[in-house]
Length: 124
Image (cartoon, rainbow, N blue to C red; front, side, top):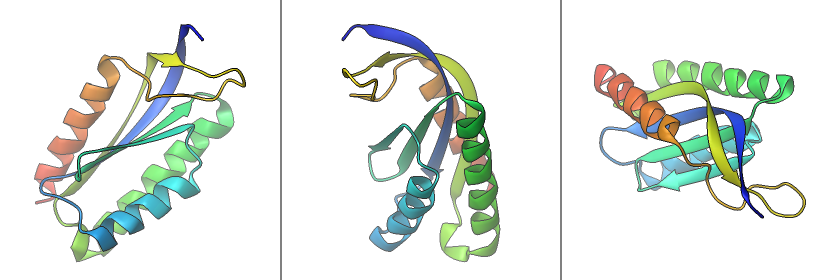
């Protein structure tokens, strides 16, 4: 299918170093429970959750951010982890049923990653 522009809310979780396997599993559990439309693991230190913007999905992304903030503040294992959320149009490649076949592309991914890294540095 052709690329289409869609509005996304993107949540990024980023570590200043790398996640241990155990810590990564905890982060993945939180993110998967939010049911993003696409989940992208980039290197061992960055996780992107892409939510196609609907009222329900934006609320799910906001709840994920709240849960992550609580976890980061209460668990010393996540020292050096930062989070960020942005809303932006991105190009998508969807299958016949409208599911995302690959991570959305656009400048917003770099911006949310940069913001999450800055947050991680503050938490270090």
